[in-house]
Image 1 (cartoon, rainbow, N blue to C red):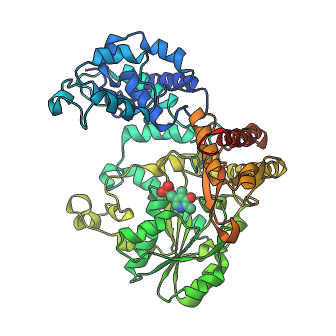
Image 2 (cartoon, rainbow, N blue to C red):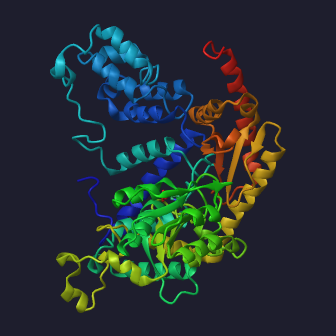
Image 3 (cartoon, protein in one colour):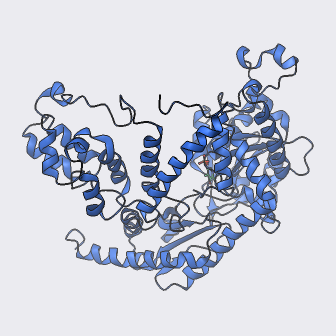
Length: 563
Ligand SMILES: *Cc1c(COP(=O)(O)O)cnc(C)c1O
């Protein structure tokens, strides 16, 4: 049967060799189609594109010419409208899919998600569509994602990889700069293909003999990177900062600690971890300039607690003063977990490492190599100064790590994670570091930070923009000056959405207490994780942001609502 060849084993490489070109052809076609860093039209349009291309059988059968028309009409990588529009139209006319196709004149109904309910209401003439459940399921077409009959591996790969590429927010485009969302290195992706094909699962040695070994070596190296002077540090692989912060609080709880403290700048996953673990919500410590105030911490910290500090905040990339916070913790007898999900890899740079001074005073550290590290998601790491602290993750499962197996020398992997089946994510991280060295990785981090510093200077010099502060890592936080002139935070939000809707740029947002009396103000955020760009690559984006803010200001004034 087409498409059922195994990726591993005899002939696996040959089969992959035939299929990967199909995936790459689809990807190349999709990238070419998209034309910008992100598909236009927002989330609804992206979802609608899937429906339009192959989701609704009637469209494909009754209107075979539609895809070409679509390409011409839409002027962008995805059609306008949205999934709600399509679903509503189907619900409104369950018995007449052909009429629906003729009416809409395009692959998806116009009007977007907001319009259909009104149309539906007018057509329906009652509180619920006529015909009841039977009418709604009159056309029992299976959902597009679960076709009864397959199209074969090459066709499926080319089609869906093209759709994915065309419909993706592409971090390899400099204008895609909202989040800690990095463009992965080819070397890591290539390694991942092989890792996926061989599919080592990291929950028992007999599923991952060499992979578990490579992981052990790699995590030992990470532990040493975080704790160069510690006697017995260790590290484990996680899915990211969220899971690492959970582990940080979990290990603290296993020592009897109940109460956590974190800065107002902390990532939301810290409070969530406390919630998941059944612990009280963290006590939130005030910040200044997005940096935790050690004196404020000292004033509230109770003995026998755990403090979570941040080395590189998600909003601004600011680092908490780790040595001072560590000293406060030591005096109070509190544990310290540092969330270095963003900033941690700066340890690889001689230039930037001083920013992380004091990190090794923490009991545990979260790092994300799917940020600075250029790995595909997920590539999280959790380091502990004392390997023994990780013992609380130990668990027995007769079929995976029976005592007699362990005594006979089979490594016990189950206690290396809170997960069971687990991808060999350390493999591509290890391949990457082997290829680049920590120096090479550090150089990429330095480059992003240098670019951010220069972009920040240009924001400062830009007549239409205001800079929040000098970047400590690679985050540039800015605000259109017209928003300051009018005091209009909503304008800032609209600029971001307008750029996203147009498919021109993906810019982030950050709420910071910069308003009068510390009131919250909305800022725009560029998180620069593209290692091959220079400030020149961001100049058009800065102009675009300022121009869009001007246009939104005018649009706001002209709108009857605003007047
Ligand atoms: C990204 C980030 C997280 C969350 O990490 P995930 O990998 O998305 O789970 C936590 N803390 C900080 C500071 C981050 O930047």
